[in-house]
Length: 424
Image (cartoon, rainbow, N blue to C red):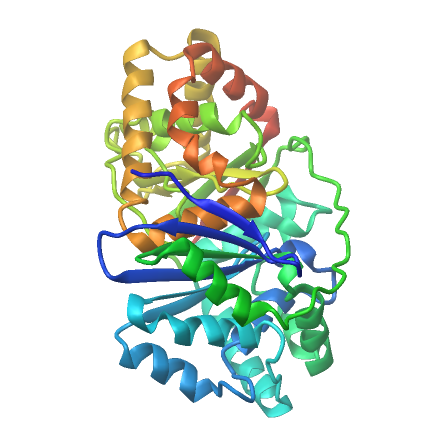
């Protein structure tokens, strides 16, 4: 895969990353804003996610019906995502139709309307979305675990926000959040596909030359340290299968520990994809936890993973327990397997297989133009694109001792929270 890209910063602070890919007449255009649930305070949670929704309600020049119609009629597709540290919007279009996406994104950076009636309509949509998620046992368990894992950090609040806040947030709350964070000096624009970089840069300069920079408030948040109060959280409700989650603190995305953690993840539960937009699939049937829990008849399925974030987040192991099996027995077996790695390490064969699996998952997540644009923007939110470019090399440098060290540092029993969701 060609890793060549160019970086440009406009006078208003907008960072532009351009990657030419001439394999098909397609362009993927992303705008990433450095704002997510991390930038919210108690009483005002859910702002970033709601603002993302409002950005599809149109401007004077580009009404909401134009956005859908214009993208669709050219055979393109669009979407948006709000996460812990960022909010992103994208359009993937035929190369000769990309101007509509460029002009629309440039306009809604500053000129979205936030009509009060639209705000109220969207309040109903988002509260309904929140209530629908509350019917999912995994969501309810995850929310309880997150609150316990982050007693002070905003990572402990669900991105959609607390329901009580969704009832009270006002149009002015949303609009002020938008005007505070949706500014060129707080954004990264990524373009990948079939274009000439010098011509595209001129086109983008024209689109954004009248968009002024604004001061963005500095965010000072104390990261959470290792989980120091291990406990078991129990939730109950309708459920066919008992669900268990075990979480440990994970390193920040820009911490070198993330690479041995990637190998450990592959060894324990099978490789994870860090691409939340496009994923490949690699079987976890040879992983230690699958063999110990699923093949032994204790669990229906297992899965593990983490995400790369500005501040330390969590590594989560999810276990779907077979009826009649004891979750606490499973918890003890998990800790035993981790302690075994701390004492004995892993074999060179395991290291080689885990590295191969993690590299394969990464390759799957880079297989199209949209995903390559994604990686440039995503890594800019917690590091910079060299993280993505050097990812495979950094995995190749991981040793058995590195895996032992990261296991010992983060995965001790005393640094683990356990959540169990079972039927009433």
